[in-house]
Length: 348
Image (cartoon, rainbow, N blue to C red; front, side):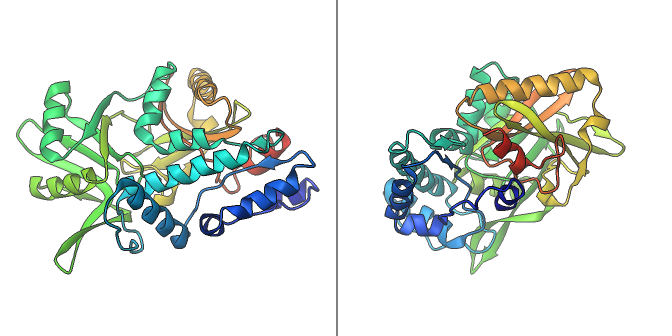
């Protein structure tokens, strides 16, 4: 964003780090007081990899939920994601109250939208209520045995299991069962025994589990942090791989788009999957469906200036997989000669 501002000959943005805000929320009030005299824009970025900020959010969430505090997660550990979200939601609500004193500011994405997009299950329900095609939701999963009941109830044998408050494929499981009783699960999550205690970690190396015992242990561990299931949606293929699409909307209109191509079920780019040129993979009908779906999804969040949407587009139909309030981090991806940050500044 700072580079984009410099390119447009705008002064640098003032930055308040998450860790500093969480320790001393009054720092934001000082910045807002200084901004009252002039028009300004305000953008909330994610905490990123700041372990201190995440530890604070996790501790705050545990207090709010009345549960015992947990030790700071190890690198890559998936720990009490529901408590983390409780802390994150409270921080966002605090931000919303502070921003209310700055009515003339352009808020790129308001806290309420960020909260809803971060709650994956609530977000999918919100998008479906606005007429978007989404994978069929089977609902919350309380454990492996409950998963089997849900599959029987819905007549379904292939699902994606997703942590309700996860991000970037962390903890996602692609699960299938066969009529002969065999089952398979593919996931970037793995269980590790640490001093005799099973711990969950996110791993860039996607692995496959083939035994019911191992799969059950993984699903049960994820379910403790809130898990839900949605129907497995086949993705279009290119060569021996398959792909989905990330589309960034700016001011409600589809802009930057990229295909995420991979050999495994999870096509997130951080898992060493490849970028592809969306235009070369889509025919006219698919392009029109993609853009219409992105536009319709953006209309479900009319107050948000920029968002990223993950879609599966096949045979002239587009299904929404996820919405991401922080989906503009696509370095080097250009649309009409501009990167995502330059584009959102020009349209602000």
